[in-house]
Every structure is written in structure tokens, then in C-alpha cells.
Length: 187
Image (cartoon, rainbow, N blue to C red):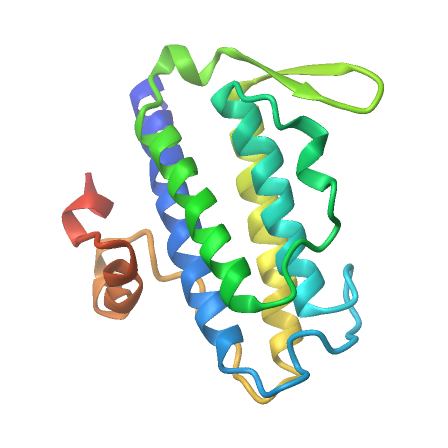
């Protein structure tokens, strides 16, 4: 795979990430009162906890990739949002930042070193490795929320219709939320 192709893959995965989060949050918005915060069996004890975790980890890594200084401050409040509406707005904002970052990637910036603040050290990693980790982290925890939805009044939504051209007929609502069109996804 050429360096150009690798940059394209990260861009498409960032698009997928943003669109899947919109669809998942929209499904969660249809939950009955009490279901969002209800105790469930999963890595985190509720849909609310899991979505908050996704968000705070995104803040942490996207800030590091941008060269920011937020660091461990991303985790100052374990669950910063009690209301899905507020959490969704913040998730969309950080997803947009990740998209901008991935749209600006070049073969050179994808291999630059990123400094990540840890409690006892500064971790140094390649940007493309951090992006791979972050995107996998998102997918992993979205899958947990998806599974938890199966025990609610809301059917888990399809979350893998955002990469290939043939799925265009399924993703219009999510594209509209971000004011995107199909040409953005297919470049």
C-alpha cells in the first residue's frame, strides 16, 4: 500500500467514525427514560458510561494528535455528561476535529511523532499508530453500546454502512447531520 493510500484509509475511517457515532447516538436518543443510565453487563456499567468513555478518550487522543496540552485533563470528570443531548453534541465536535486532522494528513505528518501525556511519563508514538489505536478504540466501545442496546426498547442500528459506495442509499440521514455529500466519502 502506498503512503497516499494509507492516508486515504485514515480519512475514510474518520468519516466512518463520525457517521457511525451519529447513528448510534440517534438510536440512543430513542431510549425510554432510565434506559440510558441503567446498569448493564459490559466493560462499562451503562450505555451512558460507555459513551462518556468514548468521548473522553477521543478528547485525550485527538488533542495529542493536534499537538495540544489537554493531556490527562481529558479525564478530570469520569462521566462529564449526564444528558445524551450534550454528550452527542460534544462527540460530534470531536469527531469533526478528527476528520479535519485526517483530511490534512500527508505521508510525512502520518509518521510524525506524537507526545502523549501519561501520569508518570511522556509516551511518544507515530501519529498513524495513535490514529489506528483511537479508531479501533471507538469501534470496540461502539460495539459494546450496540450490544447493550439489544437489552433495551431500541433495536441496535446498523453501524457498517459508511465506507463502500454501494451503501450510499443507507447513510443519507447521517450525511445530512454533518452537511456532507457522497463526493466527500468517495474521494
